[in-house]
Length: 287
Image 1 (spheres, rainbow, N blue to C red):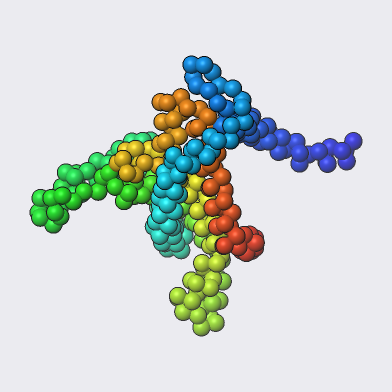
Image 2: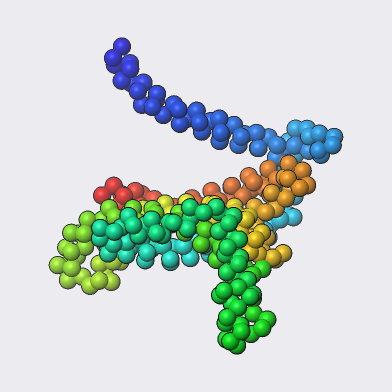
């Protein structure tokens, strides 16, 4: 009996989480897959006809929005890395006893609602706002210069809103590095640049790997930033999915677009993991 209980203990421990995932992830996912293959309308009802044409129609009609979403997601993720890595590095190695305080100050704006932060970003980037208004009034910017309703504004908003998803995993990875390893590289006549490239950066790759996954997926599927900060030429696929589902009641097309986006994101993540070398990352994480 004791041996049986010992053998079942790991499975019993993962049972609550497994049931949660099954009820709130697997079941809705299967249902959405079923809906994506239906035909019909909200008046006459929907029927399961295994209509794979919904996927082809989605790519044909909104393929440019899918590509734009992936492109914006890639740009925002790269920008997050460029901003998050130096900040996380400084806090991890220079923060001293105030590391927690600096992290709290960095994350403090994100205690505010996501929508409110995006609207505040719109206020900052507006033509007569606190940023562009004084520059335009002093003649430092041309009168027709504007940032809103552009891809730059959307990517900027995405970068700002999802920056913590990149900072925290990179900080955790850097915090785990034993500083004596870096000092040993100096003893072996490595300069600061060589020590960073050959010691710090490889050991921090698990954090970068996790940060990219945690950032790229929600960024590429976001629609709030494109709706608030962008214009007609900056619509992302998340906005299309929301419009087709809630406004047009095209449940099958919206579900097909959702699955198409998920498939493209998975392909991108697997390609990224293969290019980076997942085994090397996991090996570095286990050191």
